[in-house]
Length: 154
Image (cartoon, rainbow, N blue to C red; front, side, top):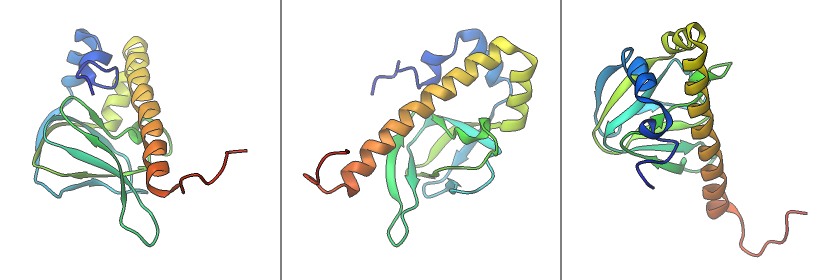
């Protein structure tokens, strides 16, 4: 994936909006194997990866969690913080040591409310990320679980 895709912060937000968002960031280091969040948990923060790899996964009853996407430098980890009821829809785990910027969701939502242009831009970015992730999840789950040649969708 190109580092300039609209799902990466550098391509999605202007310098001014990135700067405004980054004012509320704190740097964190996450050891390999750290679970950032689990499905159903309260979505009260999000991250932008500085280095390392995070996987997104979906719980599959009776099986290991299915990895639906690998995230790397510049990518957003977590979208559910923006949408009520603020509950994680996927899980996330650090597959390598990860350095990231961490954001408190309530603080960023307050910034978005205070500046509608900033709020619209951040909302559109998260929406683009979410649309990309939904598509990637669908494709990955079809690859994992759909029987080949099983017929049409009709």
